[in-house]
Length: 466
Ligand code: ARG
Image (cartoon, protein in one colour):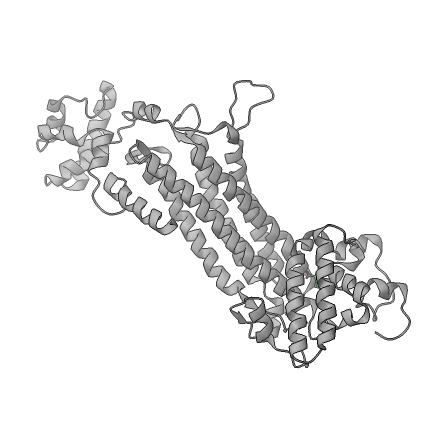
């Protein structure tokens, strides 16, 4: 810019139009540096790609490109070393970097923003960040799944109760229960991969809202930055944040899955259930009660889902009702997205450690297996296989359970005569159908909780996870 430099112009390179400075509180509101500082690497990479393209399109000379690139690299080095002064009146990391560049290389630094607006610049940086975030989350999911599969394998022989309504339901193998979480996480990984397809599109070159009259090459910058394609519509490209909302949803869903797992294991690790022993490294004690071993990490993981759900809600609320195209509201998208990804990344990593180090309490589980008539459904199915309609069989066994409860016996302990009095189709072989361990042996179709199905699942996961 020609002309005398005022104090203000030396602070804000874009403020030719305005005559008053923001007061301190307003400057603080306008600033997003505290959060978008995290984007600095993406901003540098994006700017270098943009500058290279400007040179290829003859909008800047080779000498100018060289100056801009070495200037950006020295700014990056200072950012890395924590040596760059972060002045909030510059608002965000994008302006901090541009100002530092101009301070170092002079007016030529002002050519970097040719054919570019902060709007497409921010959208580009965010997509680069979101792409890495999706990849890192998916690696963390794989690590957790790997821990789950190892644990399922270790306890593939253990028979335990499955619950519905948190009441004892049917016997299952512990490995089967553990692998249920690997399935949920697999869908989460697929959701991330799907969201990534829409993240991986380059908005750079969309300018503020309408593109630019300068002859830039959008495909070139997209290629340098490794994007799979470019956005079709400059208005949409600068206003769109669905890609971030999708990432937040994927995180919220992971959070909800982790929360369900955490809740299960909190319950299973209680004295009342006594089915899982957590490693001390993942527990805390009490400042008052010396005996306490609390599952705080599981509780915090359960709690992180609240963060993810809240931030997703915030993100959707932020976007809703915004007129096209960019509005400053969107500056706060990062607060939601960054917080969500940080919370869920941490939850996934700690979860993998918990899974890897926890142990099922085999003898406790075995000792408790006779309680709760886990074999009642199997008995009804045994009678059904002998030609009795299932609804009738259900009634017969329901009555037998009530009778057994009065006698203080399990179904297997009931005298054969009592069983036969309830249903004349029952023969002595019934004993081989009763008891949790016998029941598990007989599960038939794919996906059931028995040993052969578990072997199949383990083989599937081992192959998939490598
Ligand atoms: N820090 C802002 C953001 O992240 C930069 C965009 C400002 N654009 C503008 N037209 N005022 O959204």
